[in-house]
Length: 149
Image (cartoon, rainbow, N blue to C red; front, top):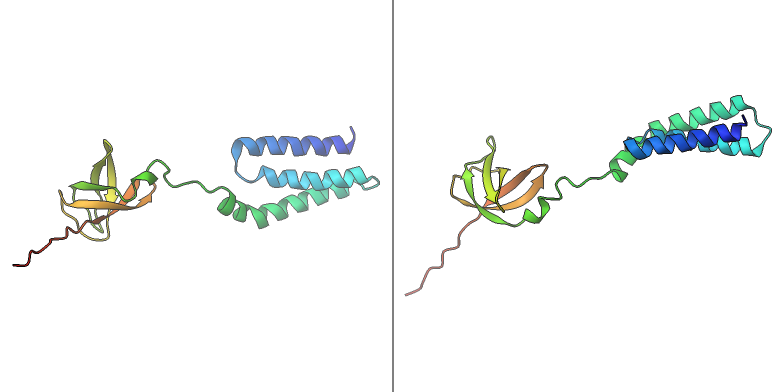
């Protein structure tokens, strides 16, 4: 079998595996295979040199680019279903504080909440952050209007 076809199959299989796993490993093997495919298509280059180049390019990409790719290309929203809850207000069901999670009910769902300060049950809170399946809340201060006599 011609080396051009071998490298083309390696690239195709690697891309297929990456499509299903999204681990950012197989994609770099495909890059190394592509380099070897280009070398094979030039002609006159030993298969051993093609294999060495494929391995070196693949390892270089895995070690040098995988972390960057995972950080920047595989971003997932922490909780896209909870993001619309930002700014919503509710009454606290269970108290919460720095050391203890509490709970609130919003849109018919009980959410686990946490806070930087101690908040007692039945206090009104506002959702200020979504972190995974927990909501960070702060106590809502009720402004009292004093009437001047």
